[in-house]
Image 1 (cartoon, rainbow, N blue to C red):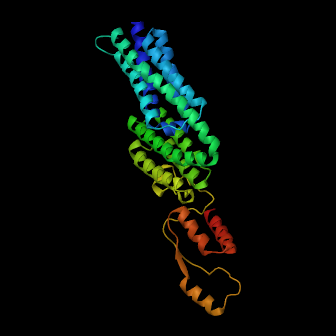
Image 2 (cartoon, rainbow, N blue to C red; image 1 turned 30 degrees about the vertical axis):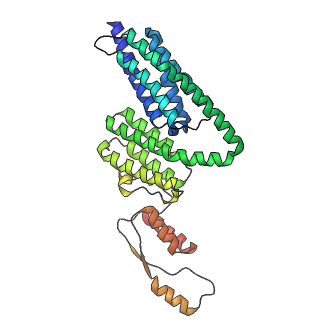
Image 3 (tube, rainbow, N blue to C red; image 1 turned 60 degrees about the vertical axis):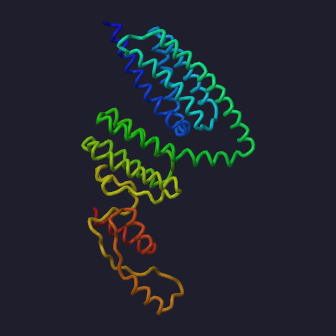
Length: 334
């Protein structure tokens, strides 16, 4: 009975590790851009290898060891992945997955079947290591010839893929169901996205998302569509080089418990407020010009979004007027 329990624990743990490896390989470019995610793949293969050795499954141990060695090569070298590399990794992964699944076969683990899988996978791992070495050498040559151009191209290619992979993983976590573990994982993924840019607006958006996820009163049904959609839109702006346009919606801020992603900006009003204004003070303005300017801009409308409202105010008032307005608002809040 004890042996069966140990076997059951190993199978369940191995399945989790296989999921980790598979997700990382399906978007290998994004995985290589994230050292921690690559470490997760390495540790997953290492854990399966150790468990198989303890239970005496030599075939699983050998295949997991091959994968672990290849992940180690990726950790220690700069490699630009391509479709062929992904295919070779996935073929090696499929061999490991097939062996683990054979443990649950109604006929038991068949050594003959395991031996056949090992025989088929040997040339795969041999080709994989050879191809990895070729990519490493090619990367060294490219870095010597065009180090600056290569690095900039790598960055622009990796960021969109990384954002896509993270959002895909978040969607999977939302589908798994509401647990403290999935909420923690979702928060960690937001942290990974936040590290992509130092822009205040981008970081504010991710902080807002983390606050919303951390609020246990928000169901996943309410969180998932809002967070996935807004992070996708924010990611597109980041990739386009426009992180300053990232704004958390009123819905997301409400889910975050009223969290203001940009606290230094003026808080939103309950309704748009028409404000009488004076035109900015300009030097050497003729009376006729001043009269026209005043007639065209004697009032404005403040939008509900904090960032958009702040932009309107900054574009409308001069420095002295903004200070006076801020002082008035602070007194009103108090």
